[in-house]
Length: 348
Image (cartoon, rainbow, N blue to C red; front, side, top):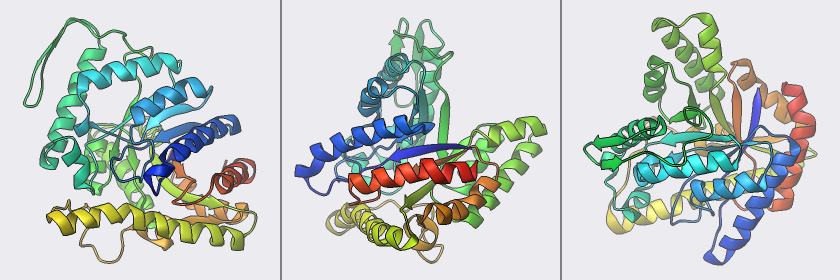
């Protein structure tokens, strides 16, 4: 199993932005030094829930500030990106990182309408923009002239320069927030990234993913290979004792979710606009905001025991967010180090 750090740092005020960005760079360098496999980057705008906001520019910084860990988007909000520009940027980062880039792609946020408003994009168009943009980028990365006429983009270029270092392009993986989205990717024979879900939902979806792959003609070797390319998101805080972990993790997790809802709720009050998330109306809080399902915390032994059911699914990797809400850099540093020293060996 592969282990990674999802850098999703919040900044509570504009005055904190620069400090948090610098601390996040230091966290990335520590993650690389500790031997984690991947550093994942988020994309959110205007509200401080992701201080560096843009995974593309931050990935370029990490490409020269780290040496070994792969650098992935989790995910780039494709509705907000021009495909020619992103195809070029990805190629440059692929060279700067010596082939360490992973292109995690998604249509765009399923919660925050103001992300789309700031870029003048209709959220209802996000999926179609995503599909058209990805198809164009794949064509451009193959080399040679491209003459594209689509619904959203009319693009003509002689050839993309530079071409990616990784051939034909850096690995692409899509996010699937819903069961339906996961099934569609399985039918295409593609891996996926799963957002925060309960252990029971994770196991059920991985079983359904395998069954769908088999039903579309993949043999067991290919099924196993695709499962090993999938990733599951978990929020994790490790401390020396269970009591210390609870003292740090529970208030931080609660505050993080409150901040993530604050701007969304304000826009709903002021504008009457909202995006209905895929898990709306199913009763109870969604897993991502639930203490029971959305947070894993404790001593190294406790965390290893709580994460074991995910390892048992055979999934290839965990996308782990270590710095939650207002946690300090020192608390995050200790959590990362304990995870590397005592949780990783137990799970592997």
